[in-house]
Length: 623
Image 1: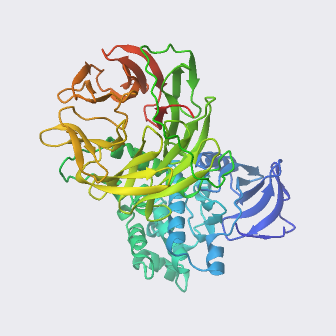
Image 2: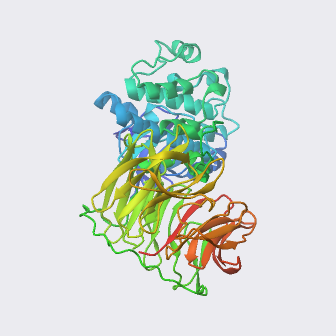
Image 3: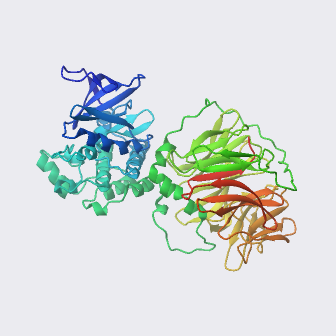
């Protein structure tokens, strides 16, 4: 983060509670110092230019602390030293991009892509916090040990808070947007423009618009097209859009991020209609991607989270091969305790005798952590931006990433031993195909994932991952289907999914070659991946001609029950063979209610006071 030089006689040695240890040699609108806080933690202090009302600048620093820390040199606070406001930020150990490129050469391939994703994630997070960076350039990108970080964000905006500030530092003209030279205040599009120019520097080692003089540079920024020669064609198309002269023609930062991670299909809804097509709740649920990514999830996926245990080399997994035996209950246990799930607005109303309990969840708020519940009821983080699915015996958790291709052109599923922390990864399919919605076999030996083609918005087959051999087999099915209908295992280990055509809504069962071996065309559509009862003798669907829940005998296909459910409720899985869980909207969010086969509410399983739906819950056995 800039080269440290000795202090000069007129430099301060103490600023507030911080002890100055050195000066950072870099251009900017302030004096930058290395310092330590009272606990000895290194920080950076930016001592800004004198202003008439420094307290107003300090107050404007407050919102900067709300930017998520994963992608920036986090702002820790501020204060005043006489008539000079100062900003205290996290010290990130590493060179700036301006230092690294001349020393080590330009970035290419995966390294350049990771830089683009990480830095644009930072821009998105900054904008989501209601802040502008205002000074993106190679000198404000720090290549830290855990990924790129944006530094010095919001300083120009903070200086504007003083009404007596008549001039402002504009940095290097080559990294300013055209509209800024027309005295137009910088907005989010200016950050997008400056980010793109910074990425060109990373890829080529040159200041994109630099001229022989300031006037020549400004002229090139305002009038000349960007020369993107030598940059990879996919990244070049993104940068070209970001470097549009008219700010109204530039994409917003969140759309840039979606393009960088290969999620263009989320940018617009197409009007195509294909056989068995229905828009999936899963794609709508990628409000996680279109909303969660807007807060910068991509960089969380690119940088592994710190975990509580030490990762060890995974030995070949020991898997229980006996089929899981379901415990059949005639009644629902009474609630004995209320459990508030930390970091969420979820309260579980539980009994230790419940056959089904909350055993994992994914937070859809930064840092998008995935959690699994221990046997003692506490939760531990197991991943970020990954859907957790605990195996039926509680031994393993399968983690499927919701943002794809951040590391390579292959999608994958990761497995973690919940007792030891050992983990391994199995590649599933290659881009543009992707594997989604993992589901365990009942014996815990295999996971099936649906293979989605985002270009055609349909599921084209399935991948079966063998946990014992750590191999994956992709099977293209004879019929494709809408992405509302994921594959899952039947109780006896076959592969099944729902389907819908012009005449029927039902369930298809497939053999290992992808051929349909049995069709229950009269039963209606199943929801999610938890259709089969604990005993495996029945399945639940949305009734063919109503919004009720229909229960069917798996052997004969006969209807066993028609269960009325509240308006706007959603199926949420089985509880016992005679009870299931429905999600019912409330004024504050929703409740998960346990109902019997007559539709009578037996108990409230969970209360979720969260209208924005920022947590993705998973139920099953505890490890």
